[in-house]
Image (cartoon, rainbow over all chains, first blue to last red; front, side, top):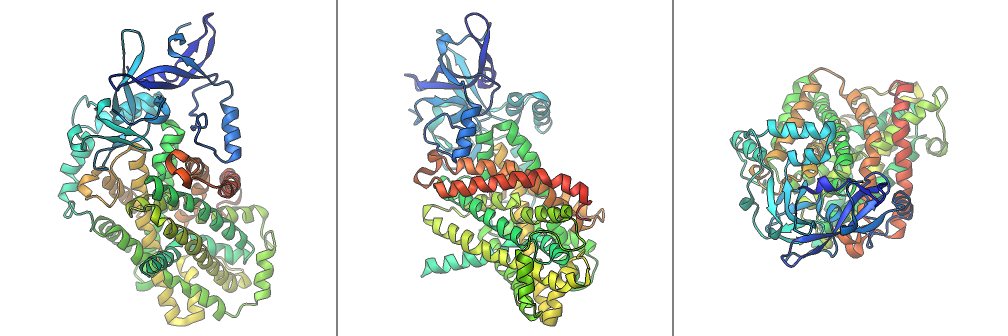
Length: 87
Length: 131
Length: 409
């Protein structure tokens, strides 16, 4: 399977409604050294590249940060076991 | 062990980053990432994939399909395989992805090989870095 | 002492290398039709390229990366592909214009039709790109471009009425008999000439080619903050000369010869020789830079090995892109399309593509992961944002103005 097949996939709530799309996958290093997916970043709208403003370390020009923040409103992190890819 | 940010973000830290070998030579961009799914249903990163066809499949749509098709046409192989870099060859993940090995250990993109053999090498001075 | 020498050399190279065929055409034509009324646009544009080139130089010196690398990383492959297509097309157009400019400069010197020189110039450009070391190629043509200082000398020798020039430079709006739309169009062209995308691709990739490190930050900043404004002064001198000779008689500048004429009037045969040398160096140097930039943009999008710092056989795809681009440029020029017109179109389309080029630079230059303590200061961000707004306005206005005025007609 390729990452591109997971990224952009719609994520559903237990009642079958769509809550958003996967915009990134957070991984933790496993014992064998290979990163394991532990949670998904779900964005309520289409898969916009987040420009990285959702993580610390970038404090952009104020205006772009605010714009990126507005574009990313409603973004949340869902632990992988709770991610449903089918309605 | 790979030196990588914790948590590692697949799209942000891996996808579209430049891969360089142990000598600093450019290998390619991460065009996609190969995952496998373990018994518990958790995906894990197995390898990095580099190739125009891979990129085309990821971009999708009309443009993506054109990229895939032209990758096939530009390669001497009828079914070109992407360059697959097992994740344990990755030394560190930062502004670039550094590998533990030399680029020559990975296999050369077919287009580069073809152009070098049939075109660039035929021009005198191809082995000078203009020094 | 050695560092001072290196810095001075860098500044001189930056001054001589600043002007290309786009600047020559835009400044001459504007001077002839509007006098110095659009001088403020040159100042604005130079400010913009200074702010952003400094960021690119910093990214090259600290993160050792080229600009296009970062475009794909930050905006994603789809948008970056659109960006690549636009940037490559514009860089190709600019390359074509520069090759045409070289041929025109040689025509001025030899009186042999420029079309004959097009393939020869293209071949020599390619040979230089193939064999000559990066830093040598930069230095030689940058320093030779200093011959354009003749325009500054010519301004004085033409005995201008300084108060008139000053009044024009500080008034806002078109001269009598000219429309606001034309004024706007030439403003767009001048701004685009100062901030053409290839300049940042080249400056950042060039920094990586020259293996810049943090120690080179001072050098990079000196090039940018001293070299570029002085280069902008050369542009203004070209505008002033054209305004002094052509505005009073209501003539327009349509050929490279007309752009050169003021210096011949002011300084005779020596002036003419210097201006031809200057035009040749400026266009040849810019042809080298745009040729390389065509390769940089494509190679960096796909992640291919690029650069002159490796032997060509280690970067076969990169060099193939350069060769193919030069060949396309030659083919276009051999259709006998006017190189000056090609230049005008290249400026308009450069303007359109500006936002996609400059936004990612601003984002990346703020990233502490790449730049650590060298990420943008608040001042740089305010300036960067302000210019981004200007860039957006210019990009949106470019094509409508082109259509309404019939390419400045």
